[in-house]
Amino acid sequence: MSKKSILYSLVSVLFVAALVLSACGATPTPAPEATEPAAPTEELSVGVVLPTKNEPRWIQDETRFNDAFAAAGYDVQILFSDGDSAKERNNVQALINQGVKVIVICPHDATAAAAAAADARAAGVKVISYDRLIRDTDAVDYYVTFDSVSVGEAQGQYLVDKASGTGNPLYLYAGAATDNNAFLFFEGAWNVLQPKIADGTFVIKNSSRAEGLQDKATLTRDEMGQIIGQVTTEWQFDVAKNLAEANLTAASAADKGDVFILAPNDGTARAIADVFAADADVTSYVVTGQDAEIPSVQYIIDGKQSMTVLKDVRTLVGDAIAASIAYLTGGTPEETATYNNGVIDVPAKPSEVVTVDQSNVVEALIDSGYYDASEFTGLP
Ligand code: GAL
Image 1: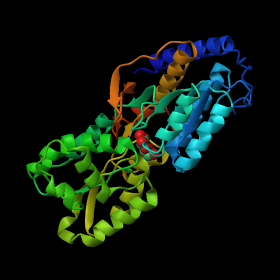
Image 2 (image 1 turned 180 degrees about the horizontal axis):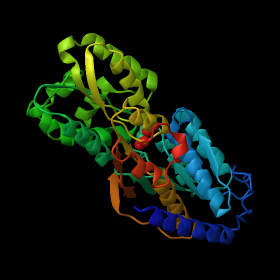
Image 3 (image 1 turned 60 degrees about the vertical axis):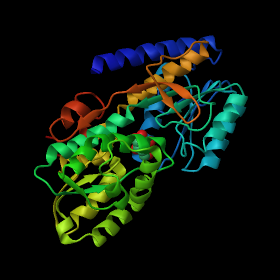
Image 4 (image 1 turned 60 degrees about the horizontal axis):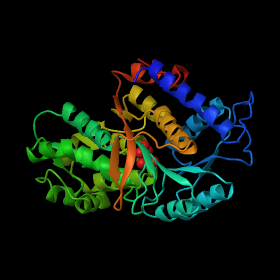
């Protein structure tokens, strides 16, 4: 999507936002000079709940939400759940008490969030699932996300493109099993990697369950859950680090050498890459990532991480605002796909993703205006 069209869609969304909010009586206060968003007025229309502040990814979403709402000249309340479903439910209740009409939620735990969604539904509040799908309830109205299966496919393809010959050691890592995206990422990676495991290009080194299923092209959710159970990082850096250390301790020198690593996102990729880089029997490694977090972009520039998958958060925020406005004006948001959450097919709008490595880091992240060059050293 070109810089110009992103700007166009965002400006049109924000223009409509400003219009709607004046129509909805939440008089948009002119954006104060200072960057921090205007203090919430008692008439809050939209609330946002994000999973944790412990990861650069969600801090970025907070910034992009604040920028987008401030540009529209109206306020937003963004609450964090600190990786705790009970806190998440309290956040939702706090927003309901403030009279919001739409809540945008990125759930910490897909199934545990169903109770909070039901609270919102009971209060007549629209629920938009953000990036991650809320599962096992019909109390979800809409879902904005990136195409998470294609994220995993991009990661798998990157490893395949860098491998030659047979017997290449492959180490698999996954996200948190409480996150529906972790299954979609793994499904995508398996779509691409499984044929290359079955033909001997790769040999799995750290999951007996994945080895047991290596001749199966399509896994059930339960089978994926069994593999994820063995290689989950819980999306936490220290869990990823400890698991990688345990895997390399258990592995022989023959299981190392030039290795290939499926890391599910940037935070865990950096932790895992540091462990492999420190192992004397590892002569080289190719490691995947996701989110284009600033520290990982620097790792890519420095050759310490091989790739990441850019998920342009400006697009996701724009889609969440557009959907909120559709509901605030009595309409329904654009539907380009549906996702079954175990109970219903949730109408959705998944967005595309972009593979980024040293060869296109400037074009994809600087020329696109996603980041300023001053954030990095040694840009190619
Ligand atoms: C996923 C999200 C990723 C990621 C991860 C860890 O659901 O799609 O972008 O970073 O959570 O928080």
